Amino acid sequence: MKLPVAQEVAALQRLTTRQLQAKFAELCDEATFSSNRTWLVKRIAWRMQALAEGGLSERARRRAAELANDADLRLAAPRTPRAPTSHRPPPQRQHVNHHLPIPGTVLIRPYKGQTLQVKVLAEGFEFEGQVYGSLSAVARAVTGSHCNGFLFFHLTANGGNP
Image 1 (cartoon, one colour):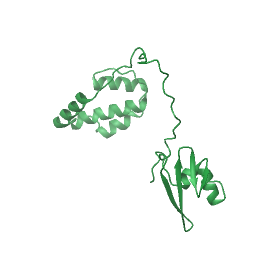
Image 2 (cartoon, helix red, strand yellow):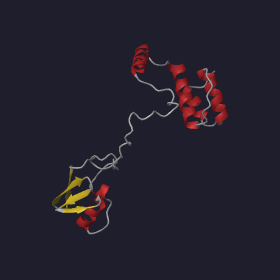
Image 3 (cartoon, rainbow, N blue to C red):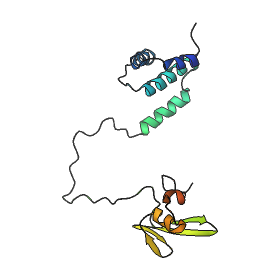
Image 4 (tube, helix red, strand yellow):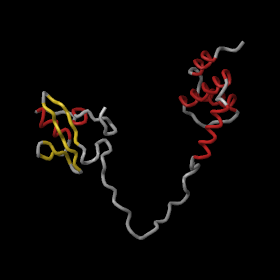
């Protein structure tokens, strides 16, 4: 009698990487050179569940095939670098902090009964007519002590408000 899928999946954690590679080859009918245990366990567990409970529906398979046909996939990187189309030097990239909102954005933060407004500039931040080099400098001017400017103004990693 076979073990239930949940017990088989739990048993995968006790296998060595070589054993996982062999199990992968047995279940998927293809060899793998991956030695990433987490990936192997996930792939084997998915395959075990698909075999036990059925895989994707026919409709899902057709939709996946449609998406794959529409995708422009590059299977390998270009072998040689592309030649420049002109003799102009490549444009210099500007240093852009992707954690900040775009210049011109006004950050609004209520603080101790006041509404603070800080305008994001291309080079710094404007607060009450004065330009500061960082959000932390603005927060220090407001609070009188060191603060992380991103946290003080409730900015997330992608530059938006929560």
